[in-house]
Image 1 (cartoon, rainbow, N blue to C red):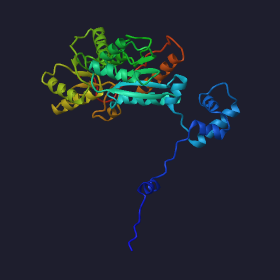
Image 2: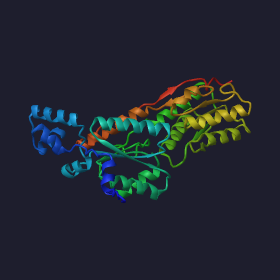
Image 3: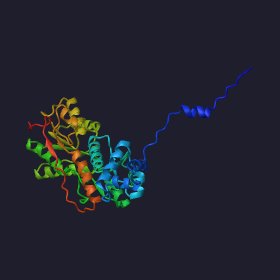
Image 4: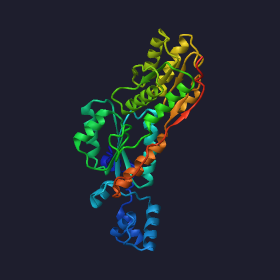
Length: 351
C-alpha cells in the first residue's frame, strides 16, 4: 500500500517565517499609561495642558516601549513638520561637511530633523530642482551652504517664503546671511605678506561664480591698493590641488613675484608641490598663504600659514538664527564671525 503525505506548503511557509514584531504605537502607550492617546500627544508635544505627574508617567512608558512618534503623522495633526532643509554643494569638502554636522547636532537638540540635498552641478535648472525638492518635503526653514551666485538667483526667482539663512559673504542679504568675514580674512593674509616685506604678491583666486572667492579677491585687492603696491590681476582657479599645481608650474617660468596668497588650502598645496618640483624652497624663495585651515594644513611641508574659519560655529549660528525666525523674531542682530590668521612655516621675510 502506498502512503501519500500531503504537505500544506502555505502553512509550512508561515511557520518557518520569522515572527514580525509590530512597532509600538501611540495607542499602546496610552493603554499602558492609562490615559487617552490625545494625552500622550500633549505630553510628547510639551503642552502646558497636562499635569506634570501625568506627563512623567507617559514619558516613562514611552521610554520603556521605545516608542518613536511618526513624524509624518505628527505633521498632519500639527501642520508642522519640524524639519529644516539644507542645500549644500560639495558636502565631501571639509568646510561644508563640518558646518553640516554642526547644523544637524544643533537642530536635533532643538527637536528638529534635517533633510539635506547637495548640488552635483552649478547648472541653474539643477539648483531650482534641488530647491523645489526640499520645498516638497514641507520644510519649515532652509539653510543654504552653497555660496554660488546662481543659487541666490534661483532663491529670488522661486520666491521662497519660509525662514531662510544663507552663507553670503558679500552682505547682499543682511537679514538672513551669515558667514565668516571673508574680506577681513583675505586682508589678514595679504597684510601678513606685506608685513614680511613682500611687494610682488600674486593672488590665486577661486571660481568666479563663488561668492566666497569674490569676497577673498576683494579683500586681497583692498589691502594691496591700501599699501600702494602694484596691482596684479588675480588668477581664477577652481579650488583643486591639481589646478594649484598647474598654476605653480606656469608661475615658475617667470619668477617675477615673491609670495602667493591662495584662496584655499588645497590650491596652496598644489602651488607648494609645483615650486618644490622646480627646485624652489618654500618659504626661502617663495612664501605661500592659504585659506580655511583644513586639518591637513598643519601637516603640509612646510606647515601652511593660512586663515582659519570656524565652520562649526557657522553651523551653530545658522540654526540659532533660523530658530529665532521660526519663533517670530525679526531683524535679529548677528555679526559676521571673525577669521583668524594662523602663522606657520610657509611664509618668511622677503630675502
